[in-house]
Length: 106
Length: 409
Image 1 (tube, each protein chain N blue to C red):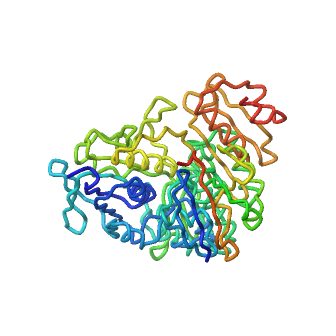
Image 2 (tube, each protein chain N blue to C red; image 1 turned 120 degrees about the vertical axis):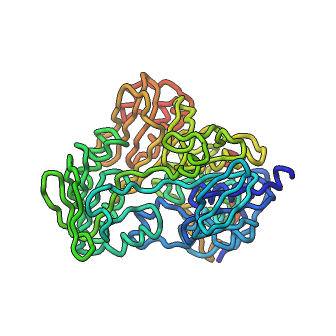
Image 3 (cartoon, chains in turn blue, yellow; image 1 turned 180 degrees about the vertical axis):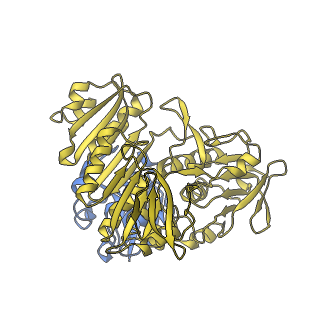
């Protein structure tokens, strides 16, 4: 279990307990957190679950696959700490994770 | 009663209906929402049914859009195992299959489609299956396994995805296609040839130009498929993947305009201001193509759920999206953006032999659609080019040494 803080583009915070094994995207979608659409349901096909990972957590959330890199390369408002949240698996190590949503998914 | 207190009734608890209910709450609707679903479970994702579900990599919990508690916690009255049978627009009521009558202020019809069952001999035999629901997927999964022979009638995306899953489970897969090539309705020839060859290399058999005249069985269970030329193909199970038809009868019977599906506008509203329709059951405007169409896809259902929820809650209308879809087979990811309407040429970028290429459909020098295999840049940039209708240089588009960013610059 990990407590994850999702921050909407307008600053609204949602603190959610997410079960291990789910993705950061699923933790948001299953709790109706706005700003993570995840049209493809986690197939890494749409880039609508784009988040910014707080600097302190970038190492713990792991590295990106070639597919994720390639999708992110063409998403809107991409920053060096951009990730597709469907590709980040939740574990105890992510307890306290903070992610922010881009304006384009507002 | 103000609009935010309105009782909203949603008929159909699929991807469209479930998303609309959740978005209405996100957008601040406070009145009761009733969500009527024919299946025993709350809304879930259907695309993984032909893939992860069959391979045992997904279950009901993982596919659920929201956990069951979500509905009660958010004052959404989720009603499983029941469907709407009659719509009386004059008194704003819906009669359900359990005899109950429900009043609405706003109605959203999200009843989806049902698979077509061929009206031929033996189609009602056990083991002649279709795939739309989790229960359907479970029946297919139970029938597959090492050495089992699966015949798939129809070489469309669902059939091909199931063929790939069947091979992963050690079953034999034989695809029967009426046309001379697979994906005849939905993909261009280079792409359909590529998929055919890729499946053949993984052990799938194809019979093209094959008319099916009937199914034969023993003890009430299918044992073979009879072709129009008299050949019989033995099998343990059959999947019918020959298309689907919209569940629009409730709207037709209530006098709402239907084409191939319920006709709606860009708010997902019918001609009756209190009645919306979303998802596969609709025949909707396609702003990038200046025509009406039914895209039959999850992204279109989600877009319409946003349109309807925005219109109902008085929120600004969402910007029109470029239609898109995807398919996963083996290690192939197909991403399709746009629709090939009005295209006058097809352009290949990359080499199909590398399993990494894209097919662009152009009208003059404008991209109308792109089908991208293992090629996210072509998909993502193609989608943007369709949205902004920017002309492209065809020579550069065909040259993989020029990046997609440079092509679009």
